[in-house]
Image 1: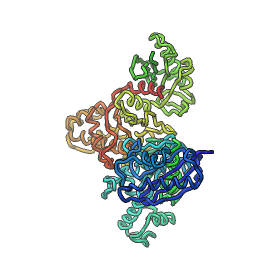
Image 2: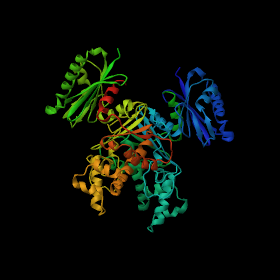
Image 3: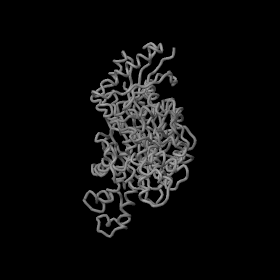
Image 4: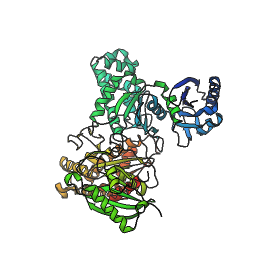
Length: 314
Length: 314
């Protein structure tokens, strides 16, 4: 009987868990709440108990499980050590070793959640069929994951794929969460798009369909207005696309992947957002026409469990 | 008896060849001229004949040779195929397979010369002891090589490590050799430093020690003046350092190496050039103090033969 692998994606509110066949077929997925009290000490026992119960219910014996993968929202050392994970309250622990113990010795593999999601998209999502991809997640922030030869480039200090904090804008005057100023995330995240739209509306007196939303405008509103041809919204998205295209070109000239997979809430704008970015991606990488393509992510919030399960396959 | 490996670095004027022990000890190095006539068809036979003669003279039997590595000045596909190599006149050939045939079946490994030099610096140069480095060569152009887990990231289209063509300067009005505008190479190569110095001298009337060199000023002159505290030369090098630091920060936030190894003619300025870059590298990567260090290359023009020999070890 074909072996199974388990993917666990620990978020700040819920833990997503999936059981997969090694060919990438998702057999079952479910969620458990993330209990953050007492430095998050219940999280892994909750996860383990839930997995063991599910395996039993599905009639899967422990020796049919190749392993479990774990995506955590913070930096992870190569040996699985987590110095601190603010979102979960974790400090100075090794969730890889701990979960393996709780699962009666099933091998556990671990990675940072953004990197793990990138691996998931490579395996069964927008990057399926490729071996080298860079994932760009445009959500509340801008996340990234670099996959080369089907392996995560986590970096020696956990900074691999942190493309949201690449400096792009010298004239920025506000600080980013990272402490920097002018990070990609400050303009290209959903939050960044909203801020850029508000700034543009304030700086100009021209009419715009965006004005009806006032201070409660969302990134989706900006994108919808731009798609409808609103000049000011198009200008905002052009700025966003310029900085994203610039960073993607930089990344192409560093690791040269086969594809950039664009995900996160903002990517729901579909081909429109791809085109907005692609214009500048091409402009800033004229050295060659032969380079990685831009494509959309496909797995949505499931990318994490897919990627975590894929970690098991090495 | 310990096995040997051979490193071959094909340049536009000479081919450098070295015979190494697998522990990285250089036993012998020499050069042969690069005969570019007739589409460079004599280059590999010349190299092979020279190697076989040297092995004989040194009393090394073919079965004591683990293999030969080859660095070529152009893009190389993973299977060794070279579509075109302008500097050598090569077109549509597989130098890896060809050289192996000429060397009576000794296994041959191949890579782009900038990437191979980076591997050499990792093995026995400024990056010795590290597994993940990015090499930055500041010469006539700006070259780069990304090494992760002791392997070259060549990229799927040969663009891996092409950091000299990362766009950094919007206000640039001249074209780069690559067809782009505002590439790092246009300001941070030896040529770029000279151009920046000339532009600054033209734009200002202030006195400067650089003025004595007039139009024949070299990058070394600019660096020497800056080291001596000349205000205008320091301003030029500050601009150079800003763009280099920006790109290194971008690369750190993409692949997060243990060290950046700075080589090429400009790096002869030593710790001064490191400090100039480091100031901005830190400024543009405030997200973490824990990141790759900046250090100087050590192998000079021998980096290519070291790296080529290292290719053999996998």
